[in-house]
Length: 196
Image (tube, rainbow, N blue to C red; front, side):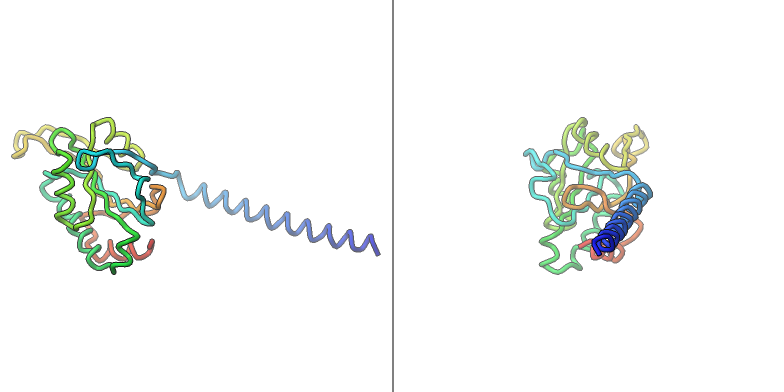
């Protein structure tokens, strides 16, 4: 009788161990195929004050890198993002924020960047900082920028930069991304709804 009970318990224990092993193995494969994690916490400047991503994080955070004097890609991307935010309900807006990070530290002043961002939607946050701060922040993400001298440009320079809106969780980890200037407000809105 006792032997039978012990055998039954041993059988159940082996089943539990096998299931736990399969779950662990499956999770390991999923994490490997998902790829490396990008994103994280960063500190920049908002209207001349220190600003840290983690200080007032939201459930969903959208991040875009650009510069205020960008002739076409940035205004198009921020305009589409603003259109998507206008489609959201007030209770949804409480759980989301949009961050515009200027990579043009030589020309974009903190107040200019903040004002530029709010031109597209009142709650958009415009950030900048020193080159080291900006490079550290952009280095957390699959993004880049490069300043190029361009005598034919009215500015005398242009900045090539990644045209992606990154969707970040409350820890600043990238959970998704979408082209800023190519997809339109409706696509950005749908992507927001997927993650809210």
